[in-house]
Each structure stands twice: as C-alpha cells, then as structure tokens.
Amino acid sequence: MSRPPITNLPRLTHPDPREIIDGIGRAAPQGKTGKAVYLKELDYSVIQQCMHCGMCLPTCPTYDATKLERNSPRGRIALMRQIADDKMEVTEAFGREMYFCLGCLACETACPAGVEYGKLFEYARAEVEHSGVLDNPKRSLIRNVMLRGLFTNPHLLRALGRLIWVYQATGLQQLVRDLKLTRLLPKKIREMEPLTPTVKAQFSDQLIARVESPEKPRYRVGLLTGCVQDLIYSDVNRDTADVLLANGCEVVTPRSQYCCGSLHAHNGEIETAREMARRSIDSFDLDGLDAIITNAAGCGSHLKTYGHLLHNDPRYAARAAQWDAKLKDIHEWLAQIGITPPRPGVEAMKVTYHEACHLCHGQKITQPPREVLKAIPGLDLVELPESTWCCGSAGIYNITQPEMSKELLKRKLEQVDKTNAPIVATANPGCLVQIVSGLRESGREIEAVHPVSLLAKSYREQGREVPLRKPSARSKSDPAPAGH
Image (cartoon, rainbow, N blue to C red; front, side, top):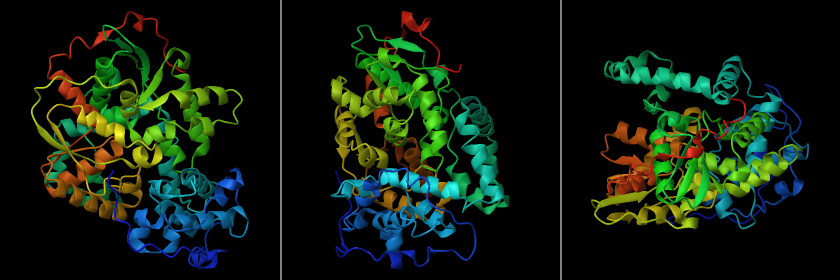
C-alpha cells in the first residue's frame, strides 16, 4: 500500500489549547453559541485517547495544506475536549472548522493510540447542528430538502434522478455547457455543475431481479444498491450481482432500498441516521443470509457502525449487532470465500488503483481489492503513488469546500499521470464522480471504473453472462422490504 511520504514531522508535544482556541473563540462576538450535548454522550475515554503525539499531522490533507494546528486531527480533538469539559462553547468558528475536516480518517490509520476519530468527528458535527451556530435560512432549506427529504425517501430521489436523466439524455445538458449558459447560474451552483454525474437510464431494480441464483449456490447474500449509487452506478450494482453469481452466491436484492444514513451521520444528523439504519435493517432477512454485501466504500464504513449507532435501542440493538457481523464489502467477501478466477484470454490492460478513504482507513481493507484486480487475466496492476491520499470527494466535501477539494483532486490526478495507466480503479461512487469530473475537465483520456466492473467484464467475455442471471424460484415468495 503506497502512502504519502512522511516529511516535516511535528515535534511530539501537547499543543496549547489556548493557541488553538485563538481564532475559534471561547465566546464568539457574533452568532449563536451552545453547551455540549452530543460530545457528552460519548464515553469520555474516547476523547481522552488522543496523546497529542502528532503522528497524524503528516497524513492530514487539511493540515498539510495550511500547517495550522486547528486544521489537524489533534487540534480538532483538543477543541472537542474543551467543549466536552465546558471550557468552551460551540461557536460558528468551531462549526466551520468541523466542516473543513474531510473526515477521510487517514488519522485513524496513523494513530498509535487507536483514537476513534470517526466517532468524535460525527458527534462534533452533531454538536454544531444542535447548537444552530451555522444556521441561516438558505442552509436550513437545503438541509431540510436534501438530508431530511430526498435522502430519506427513495421514491423522491429516483424521481429527481429521472428528471436529471431526461435533461442529460435529450442533449440539453451538453447544449447548456456548449453555449456556456452555466455562467448565468449563481456562483455556488456554477462551481457544482461540472460535478453533475450521468444518471443511468435504468435503476438497480430494473437490472436485478429480487432473487437471482447460480446453478449450484454455496451462499445466500443480500445486495445493497444504495441511493446515489442506484441512480448513477446501477451498472456497478449489476456487475456486483454478476460477480457474486459467478462465485456461487444466490443474490437477494430488496426493492427501492433506503439510503444507509452515512450522509446524515457525517453531517450532524445522528437521529436521522439512526432511523435510516432501522429501515435498512428491516429491509433484509438477516437470519436467512450469510452476508450483506456493499460495493460502496463510504457507505460500507458507516454500515458497519449500526451496532454502535443503535446500541441503546432495545428493539434494534441485537439485530444491529447481527447486521454488523454480516456486513461485508464486496472485495472483502470475495477474498473470504475465494475468487473464482476468469479463464485466460482477456485483452491485456494496465490499471492503477486509488484507495477510497473509507475502505482503506475506515474499514482497513487494502489487499482484497488488489486481489480482485490481480485475479483478472492480462491485467497489469501498477501501484499508484499516494494511493491512500484523499481525492477530495469526501461525501459532499467537493460541494461544501470546492477550493480545497479541487486542490486534492489535482494532486490525485497528477499521481495517476505518473503511472501511465489508461484505467484507474476505485471502489466508491463519490471517488468515481470526483475523478471522472476531473478527468473530463482536464481532457485526460483515462477511464475510471470500479474494480468489480473489471472482474464482471472478464467473466462476461467468457460468454457466461446469460446463465448467471437465472431468477430463483424463491423470488416470488421472498418478502418485500418493510414499509413497502
């Protein structure tokens, strides 16, 4: 696994909280402030874990860019502790600092003390939202429409996706771009427009039957199709189903699945995230499945925390723990059961691999995706320099922090160039959208794909596609997800 070179290692001393607070504000001169609520919910030992050794600093993209202590993991943790100890109130400046963090979790990989920064990060953002220090009418409207509206209702999300598809399929989007009409849009929307992904003509439910089975099934697994993944990468979901079938797995795919809640948890909406977790759990028959499969790194990292998220819920705590035990990333699952290798004869291709942050840092999965790629005959895997460095997508970071996001994307594409590979593989829809956007804008003739799609293509080139799509006799009796 390639990592950024560790240079300019900071002195191993405890930072002075007073220096970090300067500019953050013990009592901000304007805006709202608030006392800690969510950070006090955490076991205090989680906050105390940080030794302030500084080993995380060289791995943090925002600290690397600014060299400011408060833009580092240990600086942010020091601020969180001040708030948890009631020595500082939640202020607007604190809120902006928490949202300047990518949440890439590279600091967790580097940390010798095992600090659970991901938990602290989510609870700190929940603290910001609870206090209302960043509230304004425009922001509140966007959050209500997106987080509490679209991303809690798969039918509304698909309706929006269909409208975008019409806009793109009719050529209207290209016409708007060719005529440079985007310059008439407000600055924020104008900056976001190049990130608009291509919506697929068919969503996952149209491509995948409720239950599909190979000739001789060895396992029965549930397949998560996601929310945004369902709209823009339904083909990757189909590829995932085909790969599972080729490896002896009967695939159960509930209809119109809900968002996993990662967007909510990462943006301070913990209660909504808990509700989305309950809905996801209700969609699957956990007792009847050997595993639940996800192909989205960011979602997978969150999906494996349902046990923690619902540990105080008397109705769901046990089922959430069972869910965590069965939740597997597709690469992790294939490595566990053994990959059925495609037969030789595929055209040779050179591929490099970008490691999605929440796969390598969040889930600690680094080798299984490489095993998937190396199982493909004729594929030459070229290691990517700084493969674990964030590409700048980070959920919706490329929308909320476009300048920093673009700098990280530029750095990532420069590293891809060094490999001379015509294909870059990555296992997260956010990373794919970000990298595809950067490749298109820069005019690079490089293809960005999911590793599983390359494996599925290899299987299909052997003429095995049709036999693998046999609906199971159980498909008619398989229960629909709760709430449908």
